[in-house]
Each structure stands twice: as C-alpha cells, then as structure tokens.
Image 1 (cartoon, helix red, strand yellow):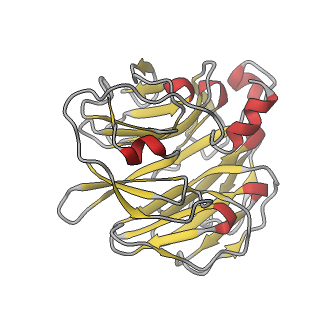
Image 2: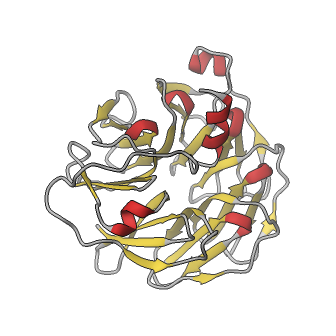
Image 3: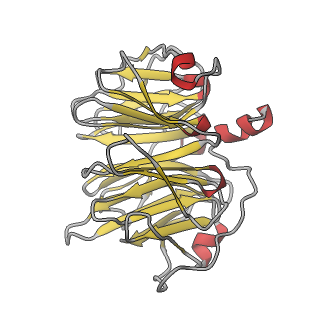
Amino acid sequence: MSMSLRRHAHRLALVFVAALCGPALGGEMPPPDTVFNGVAHDTLYALGGEGRELIAVGDFGMVVHSDDGGDTWQRQGKPPTDVALLAVTRKAGHCIASGQQGVIVYAADCQHWQRAEVPTDARLLAVDVNAVGTGYAVGGFGTVLQTRDWGKTWTALTLDWEALTGDWAEPHLYDVHVDARGEVTLVGEFELVIRSRDGGANWQTLHKGRRSLFGLAMTDDGRLYAVGQEGVILRSTDDGASWTELPSGTAAILTSVWARPGGRVVAAGIYTILYSDNGGNSWRADTSAPARIGWHLAVTGFQRENDARRVLVVGSGGTILSIQR
C-alpha cells in the first residue's frame, strides 16, 4: 500500500472515491430513518452502547448520547480533548473513547470524562472492553494498548510482526473485539486477522491477504465477519480457523459490519449499506437516498424491549440512521 493510501486509511477511508452499490437483491426494504443530524462539517466515527444507553463520538471531541434506545439523541459535554474521537465502547456503565494523537478518554458513568495517560501518540482507530474492565485500543503502525482497569491506565504491547505477517512492516490496525474471557481479535492492513487467547502475551495469525480490513463482527455462535477495501467481506463459521470471501456485489470501501446469530448481517461503507439474511451468502444493497449519499463509518445493533433489533449507522454530517433488523 502506498504512503498516500495509508494516510487516507487512517481516517477510515473517508477520502476514497468509492463505487456505488449495484441493484438490490431480493425485496425492497423501508429506507433508514434519520434519528440525528449534525451540521454539515460534523462527522461521527463510532458508536456503542448497551440496553437503552447509547453513545456516539466524532470530530473535535464530539459526543452524542441517547437514553431511550436511540429514538432521540443529545449532544453531551465534551471530554477533555479537541481531537477527533475515532472509536468508543460502552460496557457495564463505563465508556472509553480513543482517537487522534493517541488520545484516550474514559468515564466510569459515561458522562464525566477524564484523560488517560497513554504511552503512544499514534492514532487509535478502535477500542473495546469487556464486562470486567479488560480492554484494548489499536491503531497506526501496529499499535496495541491494553487496560485492565476500565481505561484508566494503559500498557503498550509488543507484537512479533515478522512472525505474524511474514514481513517487517507494522500494519495499521482498524478494529478490535475482546470477549468475556479476555480473548482479543484484531483486524487491519493486509487482510490481517490475529488473535490472542492469553491476555496479549502470544498471538496467532488467523488470516492475511492484500487488502485492508476496517471492520470486524463476532457472533455468539462462532461466526466472524470482516469487511474492508474493494467491497471485501470475509466470513468464518468456525471461530476464525478458516475463512471464505463472500460475493458482496460492490467495490465500495466497507468500513464496518454488524451480525447476529441466525444470519442477519449489515455491512456499511462509503455510499453503501448492504443487508444479508442468510449469513452473508447473498447481499442486497440499500438503494434509498440516505444510504447512497452518506459516508457510513460504523454500524452496530442493539436489543429493543420488543425483541426487535435496532441497527444504527453513523457517519458524515454527524448523521445517525436507524434500521429495523
């Protein structure tokens, strides 16, 4: 990957020119509802939540939150930073956000933010934490940080990239997932998927290739989905042991993916939202105006009281779209 492309990828491919999705497969769906609009120059990069408490973050330390499951959203007081916040996670009432210049902020109540001392100034493009406070933040040039106290303190981990990639290059890392046991899975450049089962001491390469992977989703039934450049969608049905490339029907950059047991999957990207009801075997493109005109940077689903799933997509213009899945 050229240095120019690597710099653009740091911002989750915002400045790439992507192809529009092809025609929808199967029946039409109602268009997404717009539940929040920022101003023209706002961008929301990430969202997270649990139950009815949801949070999204973006440019210049922007934070918006919802306490009614995403029906309404309000701007929150800014954390102690003016840089772009590129990732956020919420678990057990705690929130952690990461972003440009190695910034990490945390809040035990998801409202009163504090700045963490962090041993890097690299862009931190993704962050995740489990229910006991073990978390990871990842980003530029192979940066991997670990916390065991809900984001208050962080330790830099050193990975053997030559062994993991067969190259001395330190790949940019774009997404991270840590489960209840503390197992952590990362995706990044070179179609890299790696995992540690022992708290970051040892790492295993699960997949590698030539394109960048920007988003990762894992389900409770052992399925993994990873999305990225050139419309690539990868799926594993055996907890990462083997991978299959799925026919996405698009060459658009895909930045994020959400999946649930039973086969429902949503992938989002530049001017693109894709749906699958059969575990990714086939996809249909959302051809509505909200899907085709936006740069969609993160997608996440949340359980609703009536057992329906609300899927939310954030991106350019500070927009939050709601999809019933």
